[in-house]
Image (cartoon, rainbow over all chains, first blue to last red):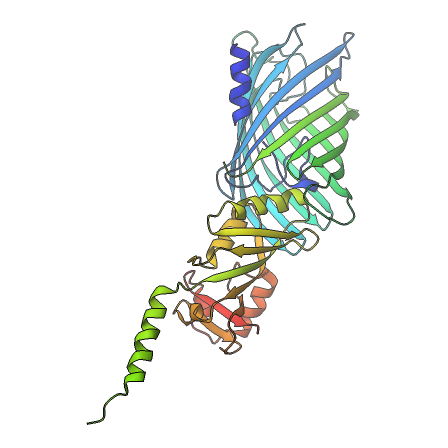
Length: 267
Length: 165
């Protein structure tokens, strides 16, 4: 019941602008004011050190307070300990502070901050406050949209704390990192719009990287994404994440994502 | 002493009455939005516009991002309502062309910078202020109207308009 309530709470509080509606990174654009985005991101990652898959369920809600400010709440559910357990949650705020729009194009900048808590065991050098670590992240996003192509880049600082109550952050690994992402998205279908009911298909490629500031250990992943948009209101994302290079300990770097997203306008 | 003919008094009275009863109004708004190319984005603007009480209907050309908004009779909307709502959806106005009753622009809030008032029943006007044209166009307009005191004040309560018909 508690879990159900949490799910509902989270469902009642996520992301919206097609080619730049990336799966793992946020664009500098926000969700529309007074709209509510609800999504459930599921992932299954192959364990490197043991056999089997690591399943994560992340329900999120995103609310646009006004044209420049949005909030998001996320919950982290995982089966790392054989059954589904809610391990933590996260709050983020994003503020768009620059917009240069022209017909069919824009350049936007935004700043964001996120705080997450998590009670899971700490089992890797990679710092990930989206489901693994307690900590905060703050960064800057730049997004350029030119006709059917969107390019977005993020640079952020991420710091991990103890995963209270049982798992203090290990002293022998770096607790803060610099993250960088580069994402490309392209509208593939339709070539010409006929109605709002038409299904849109976007193809995306995201590069996600991290460097632990203390020792320079790094990784870089590539994430190809296929995205379907139905009725200009609902979204389905399918993605595969693969490690390209890494010099750090990661427990499950390769896996798949399934994301379902729905927007409620004018609430 | 010269007396004012009765028919002029009557005409004057009727004019006053007409001005008092008929609301200055916008019949239709054609909005071209900027900064978007996706249908989900268009839908955000669509829903935002449809949420307005005075909006009768919204037609969308998704390929040009043009929204034709038909408004209810006797509304008292100002051009700013379209700017506010497009921006709420996360985008901007690239051009705003309004179909209005000629009385509307007699109001002091409207300053004609191009075109002339004429006898047409409905006027087509374009708003040229900041936020109602693309940034590039606005830069050009600022240069062009550098001698206009009001244009460069960027007062949000007044609207500089071009009469198109």
